[in-house]
Length: 169
Image 1 (cartoon, helix red, strand yellow):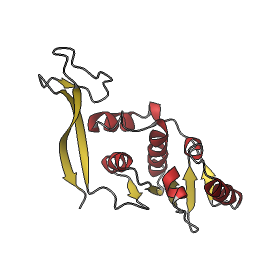
Image 2 (cartoon, one colour; image 1 turned 120 degrees about the vertical axis):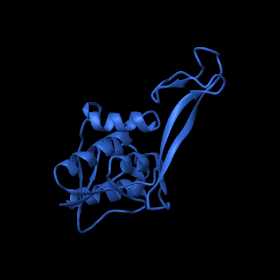
Image 3 (cartoon, helix red, strand yellow; image 1 turned 60 degrees about the horizontal axis):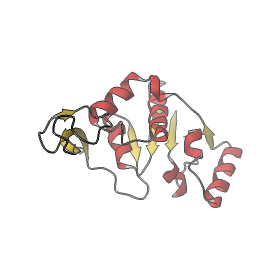
Image 4 (tube, one colour; image 1 turned 180 degrees about the vertical axis):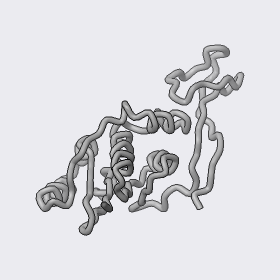
């Protein structure tokens, strides 16, 4: 089945498919604050065009491994991770899934998980990026999910550094 998973920006910018099922997570719905988008959301739900579905990303080893190795784990919100988990769940069920988002970090993670995405207002990412964290002073490497801000050896700031990039073309 063809379906679209929408993040808040997708619906706010007016994207939804009339010909396919659209899905959102409840955490995504909570991000919608303007009355016009709320009215659109309610109409789409009432017309059966959009459905709210939730999955738990925290137990998904594939998602956590990809986000940890890419350095995106700390950059993505819980809502972003919910959306990615929903997309991966439906792909595993054999659905033809496209996630609608303008968020570059989400697009990076989706691409690394071999999930399709569509931008609404932006051009979309041109390459996937992997990040690492390292000390600006002594260059000690830290895990990408570290919450430390200063090096435990020399006290210099810990920075995020681009490791590599792969073209999406």
